Amino acid sequence: MRYLTAGESHGKQLTTIIEGIPSKLNLVKEDINHSLIRRQGGYGRGRRMKIEKDLVEIMSGVRHGYTLGSPVSLVITNDDFIHWTDIMGEVPIDESAKVRRQITKPRPGHADLNGALKYDHRDMRNVLERSSARETAARVAAGAVAKKILKEVGIEIIGYVKQIYQVQAEDQHHLSMQDKIKRSNESPVRSLDKKQEQSMMDAIDQAKKDGDSIGGVVEVYVEGVPAGLGSHVHFDRKLDSRIAGSVVSINAFKGVEFGIGFEAANKRGSETHDEIAYDNEKGYYRLTNRLGGFEGGMTTGMPIVVKGVMKPIPTLYKPLNSVDIDTKEPFQASIERSDSCAVPAASVVMEHIVAWELANAILEQFTSDTIDQLKEEIEKHRERIRQF
Image (cartoon, rainbow, N blue to C red):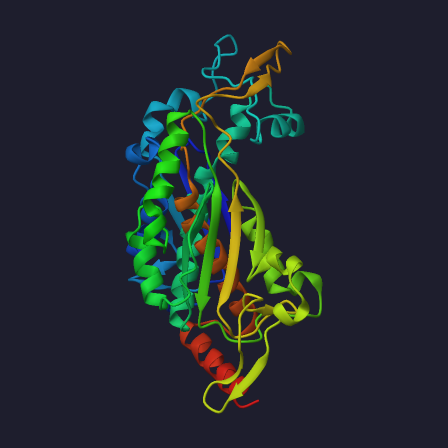
């Protein structure tokens, strides 16, 4: 599969075009809207989430509730565009007219200045509108389709928050997959640790009161992935590296780890690697899962556990110092409407990003013109490795 997104933060719409989806996959817009609604929720979101209700329209590639095998195009209309028509519209304006709401003061931590330097924009709104995290709504839409494919082949996935600022959630390894999903969706901060929810919300409230922002750590957990996805034979076929690249492509994400991750630097090999065992019913498995479901760039059949770290959002109501690119004078950076903490929402985004990479790897490896063909191929694979 592959997909492209188009659209600006305050533009008319976000568009996603997906190619490579098997035919006869049951797909309705409610499947995607459920994911979009989850992305817009979470404690710490700003006023914009109340203005816009992201809902998708399926424009092509689906007929009577089933995919055709042709490209699927999705559109998320921006209800707030009516207030931005003169600012973001495509119609040329009089050369003597002043462009409204120009941005000449780059915000530290954003793409503003780098994008302006690269594309020669004197008005940095041309950069920030596309580099905005709003584009992740289009990526979540693509991931929602990927999740439908994963579910068809017995794979479940959920994202949740491990840490907000200095408040860390305790591991909840004892929870079943369905309990993880339930707790994440019910928690205002998408945490599995109910004891830390209030402390996380208090940290968000304090940051908002201070005109500041805070980041955190999110984790994605996947069950049902068969062993042998990905490959060891070349760098760009290693599935964990592809997932890692996609995770750090999410706005404001600065790091990624699998299993115990960076903690492995403090451990010996005997405390890091997962011993192998065999069972007549389920085949090979690991006695632990410290490596997060990957060895040699391939899945082991154990649950995939991947974490991503999100930096604090750089748009602050107590802005940092910057330099006006027109006057070259020091100035406080521009203030755009923003969240004090988007970590809960980011867990939903990362969940869908990982889902896309997994579904894509599956479709690369197995015959998948139709969804029934894919299910049959994966079942044969599961049986083969069980008897290996």
